[in-house]
Amino acid sequence: MSSAWARPVELVSQLTCVAAVIAIGSIYASTSATLDPNGDVTGLLCSAFGMLVIAIFARVHMGRIRIVSLGMSFALFTIISLLATVASAAVAVGGTSYVDSTLAAADSYIAPWYDWPGVARGLPWHSNLQWGLGELYVSLNWQPVLLFAAVAIGMIDTGALDRIVAAWGLSLSMTIASFHWLPAEGAYLYYGIRRADLPGMRLDLPWRYPEALARLRGNHPSIDSSTMIGIVTVPSFHACAAVLLAWAFAHNRLMRWPMVMLNAGMAVSAVTMGGHYLIDIVTGVAVALVSIAIVCALDGEPVRPLPFRRRIHTDRTSLPV
Image (cartoon, rainbow, N blue to C red; front, side, top):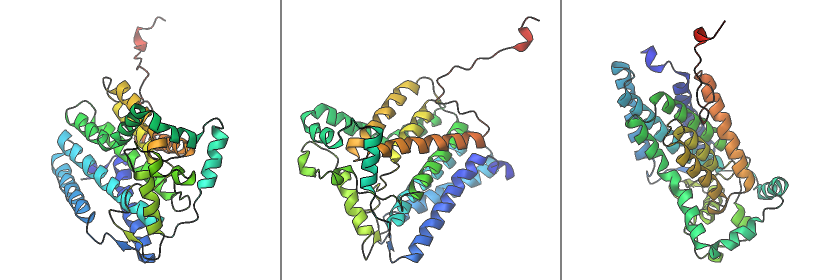
């Protein structure tokens, strides 16, 4: 049984789940929040945990065959992602004052030439660009499915998938951990840009999550599907995910560059489509890179993918003496 749990990166994923459950339970016990009153998330979590139990049983009795490793990684990925949505809502309860002015000031410092409200208000005049940015932004919904499919057919190794899932969990943990002290309403509300000002905008999330935040910070907060909608502004998890997914797909030579370019676009789209400040993107990228470095160090792997460099094999015995 010990061999089934020997890899440190797998322990990172499992401990992320445990830490999320403890955090959610602690916050729920210390506040008046109502947790999942309609059972929207409970059923999904129970199904994912059931899948994980089956995968553990199969791992112990069948070893590290591809289908078993894939099932375990998928179950852990699903649990981590679902727990993260609950945890972000729980952390928002009773949060500190909004930090939008600080984030806007940071934007002015790192990119004084960038006119956030001017760019946003100009989007309706570029409908094709607006449509493309929207497609890039929502690609986060289907890219993980493509990743697991690539692993299933052998295009990406299951060992690499273990590292990817662990880095995903670490990034989510770091992103959510800071949210209680760094809540923000988002750039659209800060700059006074209404939904009606952007008639071609297909996504309304930048205006919905401030409403969700207000409910969570109110007198009778309820953690349910209406408040678990991606309310963390800084660091941007879209930017985190863009780096992690680019790194994941970079393990396959054919998928590497198309997916790197797609995810670069997804990170950029988070500014206007997600209502993020530029500093949100910068910190999101930094969180992902730190997570990748930690996971690779734990697994004894060099931080190679994004593996754009070719490996050079040198047979030292053939060198002239």
